[in-house]
Length: 355
Ligand code: COI
Image (cartoon, rainbow, N blue to C red):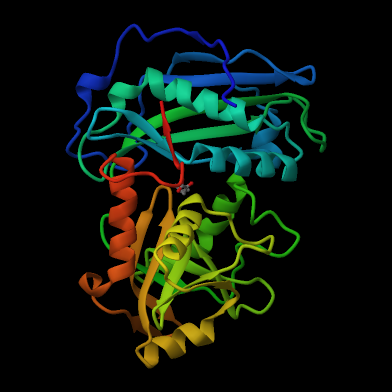
């Protein structure tokens, strides 16, 4: 059931849309004209408002800054070839947002309300959806604690916001990833499964060390033994080994439940490809590369979409993967997801929300 909410909209007096260079959109640096704001206080969500995009005021003791009660989501809107505005699987993000809220002691937003707030802002910002192929309107919902108090306890007040950015690809080329065997992104019982701001902050230092060695991202391994592959910096990770789609299962607390990755798994099954969601060892990836059975490796994420992995750094060597052109599955799944968002193929799964 779709929730209907009345949202006050205060339009901007001066749109920035004319100043956008639509041919050169860096990821996450161009912001559309409006944002949605909804506060939580006295144990209840207040009315949501859409207001001109701009800076927000904050108290120096605002608890999110000090103790990190801060979570976010990412999704995308596109315009189809028929001119419809669509959002890809926002219900999945809404569910994951609830999980993140619960893990961080934050008030949840009901799935229908979350989806409706996203839909409404996209409706207001629909002219900001880029028309160039492979481009989208990235949607960033986020929630942070706003108590003006420096004692440690869950905040009693919060602010939920959504803004949007017209974006191109997050990665403009196939990525090189480095298997990380010392630093840990997440450990069992931690917050790795939630989309918590601090997970990303904590990954910056190890990622910078990898970048200094020429890699775009790290390929994280489990915190206990560093022998199982988990996910990469901005995306989940998938492999094609012996014609099977192999990807780390999300049973543990340590892997983010990716919407794109779930869609990849569901499509592979739909197309009759064998899928193994299970623990994946570093040793088997090294061995599969050596014996030629590792034919594809890619990241899957909202921002990253399907990002081919060209090279996997392992200790002092590089596992070089087959050419991008030869990668039948990841090329097919990438094209299919793009086509679905562009309305060029049917959506038999009910993944597309028309705005
Ligand atoms: C996304 O794919 O939406 C993400 O949140 C990853 C990244 C931009 C932090």
